[in-house]
Length: 360
Image 1 (cartoon, rainbow, N blue to C red):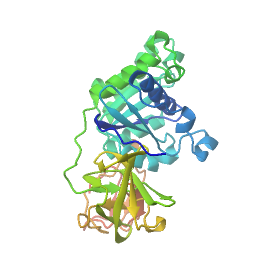
Image 2: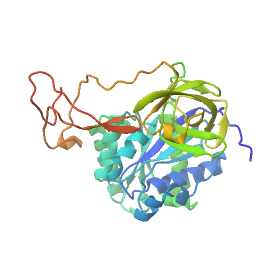
Image 3: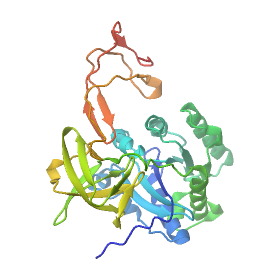
Image 4: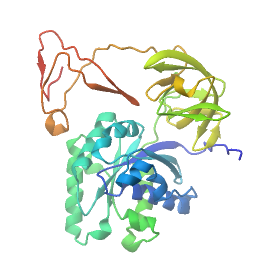
């Protein structure tokens, strides 16, 4: 089947769901696609499809990031459903780094939980600029005062991590109701419609770095028989066009290749632009020549380094960081875009030990 061309008439914004396990992130994601398909004509994605990798099913929790799309009146949204479980902070780092704004899902019945706090902190650390809150499962709470209390708790938590808690929009509703097409007390479909309108109004249209040299961190690599190797990721800056020469940089020796096709949400593009999640087809590159964590770049624009000097603030235990000090020769994991590598820390002269809460 011939692939359709991607429609670029609407501005493109990346969002995602964050929050504690079982608070309803995936249900809300499915509800967003259902409501937007009815109101704005985009495609529905079922709950099972979003939660579909085998390991996710087996443990009943979301592990990998799922990508869906939907339209509002004025925008095209690409939405990642982020991992909610503590073991998958790594994935959260690769997923959340792609967001122009996040939807924090918090159960009105339970209030903020450990991963609610953890995901707000992570959003602050990886630079998610805006958070909108959806207080879910409100149909299970009869007491208006309790709802108010949970709302205050969430606002306090956001303020703790330097988000504007008092000014953050909070929408109260039930994702399950919206998914089932119900709307008692305007908690179902109406609440999700209101959420989309809030995303439109509260998250400014992002300024994309299209004028800079092309760079795309590689998230995944696929082999397509008869066509070659496809790498996927979110374009960090610049534009890639069919027939552009490219370099694959990082983790191993730099190699050269050529772009022979660009796709987004299974639609063909003439070019991929900063801020878009794309698949780039590479000529003459074998599946084993490229791996997650490398970057696809304009030739000559990026030089890899294995040493750098940094100013570091070490998070304290209360902030979700270390409980113990570390010393010269400490070997932590460094997270770079879509990969993590083990590195070695040299401390400044005269510094023997670094405590949680220190700035070095």
